[in-house]
Each structure stands twice: as structure tokens, then as C-alpha cells.
Image 1 (tube, rainbow, N blue to C red):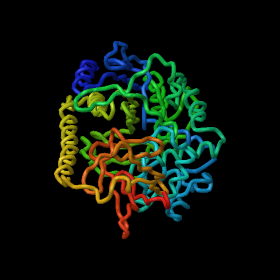
Image 2: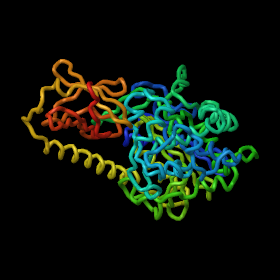
Image 3: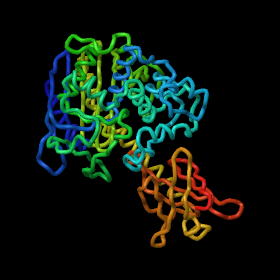
Image 4: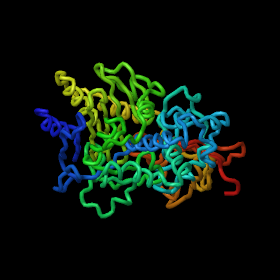
Length: 476
């Protein structure tokens, strides 16, 4: 590992990451564990091996492992239809609804896009059961089992199988069946459990070239998809457990054949994904809560995590008994990819490549594409146009069976948009279109809301580009 720490520090400066923690496990032993940088920009407290971070979607493998335990116990099978187990769970297509199984839910092949705005727009507005009940109204986006499309809501549904089968919440099951046996004493499943914690990393975002701290986002309503908070001390135990084939201190917690199912491709994914070629990869697939790919002749099992202001990565190379975890406090940073490929090159004895340069070039391409899209939309904007109705005539309640209700009101001669108790202002764009603030920090660009008139000239519909076409509620 000669020179590795210096490489990490250099890369952190390049990617403007305030703090990072990393652990490496090989041959069943913790061989590297170190914190870098600070917990919060502008403060001196350093990141160390005990510093807590949100791990985001790296939580998904915990959910799959918990369900694997229930598969081994005979409580369910990967291919058992779930509709009879989750009484309020239905999909818009009755045929798909009747055969959808855990294997589909945990491999993102349901044919649904999912709608993260349901839980991101207003924290904890809907609870887990209410979100599940809404899913029957989401139209199928792709033919069932034909296309991989990331879907957090399906992991929520999968996680809700645990209380349906055991009478124990997902949170308590994870604590009792995984955290406790592995000795992951600092890990938890809600930001509510971070209250009073002193050694805690603050989330940060990079906007207009400047890094700023932000508050933690609660994902309690979506916990099985990404709510775990942990540190590298605990996560190194998770690495050892996974590399041992889900055996801990001589006890088999998940059977080998079940582990193999989780790490076997359930659906292929396109290369490149999502926009770039994966260096040295000939295949890319998704197992049950794990991304699967090859790199220079070895199989890599990994899953990242992004939640507002935090980026994580857990990676395993089972045939080399090697794995690592990276936790950082900057949103959507490619630093984790840089370090992943450097570690893989070191493992394989390969000459060090300029991964910073490689991923920075991709980052610049992505940013340029976003700016190009914004510029294109601005050029298409028709200036000096006015709405066809008085602003008060757009006001009212608009509804959609899946997304719920949006209230449009007039305040200080401007339209206001209220969704899930959170209200934002609308600014006129052109004609009957208005710009709404972005619903997620991970969705840059210009988002419009457009009102449509009926044959009587009344604003009867509202199209929100991030959701759907809403109908005006009768007499509202």
C-alpha cells in the first residue's frame, strides 16, 4: 500500500471531498482502516474509524441478506409471488401483480420506473404502507422482466416482506439478525438514532464550484432501500462476513447456495451504464442487491450508495478474499470510483493508471451535458409571452392517483405550488408553463409545470414534468 494514503489525500483535494473513511479486508483480516479529512467543512474535528456516515443504497445488500435468511428458513422462496403476503401491495398490471416475486424486486426488473419524488419531496409525509398502497397506480414503463431499471420503491416493498413474514419490523430484524451478531454496535437504521452522536460526519453538496454542508435527509419511510448509518469499523465486519460467504465466527448465517443466488446475475445491464464505459469490463449485471462485473479477469461484487450529501461504496472480490468500504461526506462524488479502481489495480499488481483524470473527464462531460440541456431549454423559451388566463384561474387542487394532490394558490401576485405540505414558488417560463424548483439535488436542470385548458377554456389539467398529468379536482 505504499503511497496509497498520499493518493487518497491528493484525490480528495481534486474532488473537493471534505472527509472520507476507508477500510480494507483481506484473507479474513482488517488490513487497512483510516479516516481522512474533516467531518464538517470549516471545523477541525477529523474523520476517524468511528465516524458515522450514511451509507445510502449500500443498505440494499443488508435487506437482501435478511430476506436470504428467511429463504433458508423456508418462510419464502426467491420465486414466490409476493401479492398474497403483502395484502395492500398491487401493481397496475394484474398479470405482473400476480407473479412478481422477490427475485424481481431485488434485481430491478419489475418493469416499473419508481417515483422517488414520493419520498424525497417531503420527508416522512407518507409512511411505508402508504407508499406501497400507491404503487398500484403506477403504469408499467417496460415489459416485465425485460429491462433493468433502478427502483428504490421495490426495495421498500421487499423490505416490508420481513414484518409480513415475521411480525418484526425491518429495522428490528436488521438490528437483531445482522448488527448484533456481527458486533456492529454503532450502526443504526434511522437518522433519529444519530441524535446526540458526537463523532458524526456532516453531509455536503458541491454547487457552483463550492462545497457547502447540508442537513441529513430522513429516509425512514424508505429504510430498506437506503437508511443505514454506519462507520468503517462496523462495515469492516460486514466485509469479513460477506467475504466468508455469510459465515461469522464459525456460524453459517446464510447457506452457500443462497449466497450464490445473491451474487449471480439475475438480469443483464447495458454497458455503458449509466453514461460511461466501465474500464476493463466485459459484462455488467445485477444480482440480488449487488452490481456484478468483471475487471481484468476477476469478478467484482459491489454496491454504492448516494443519499443527500453522502457517497458510499462496498466492494468484494471473493476469489481474492479481498474487499473494501469507502464512506465519504460529499454528494455523488466519483472519488469512490477512482479509489475502487486504484485498489483493484494494486490487488492485481497492475501499473497505476490516472483514474482521477479518467473520471474527471467523464465528470466534465456529464456537467457539460447538463449545461447543454439547460441552454437548449433556455433557447427554446418564448420570451415576452403571457399566460392565457389570469393567474387566479390556474389556482385549485390537481390530483393524480399515484402521486396524490398538488395545490396551486396565488400569493403576492405569484403562483405557489404545494405538494405533500411543502410549498414552493412558481416563476413564469412562457405561455402556460411555469418553472418549479428542482425536487432533488441529484436532478439538475430546468423543471416545468404546464397548465392545459379544456374546450371551455378552463385550466383542467396540470402536467408536472417530473411526475405526470394531474386532473383538476371537481369543484376545487
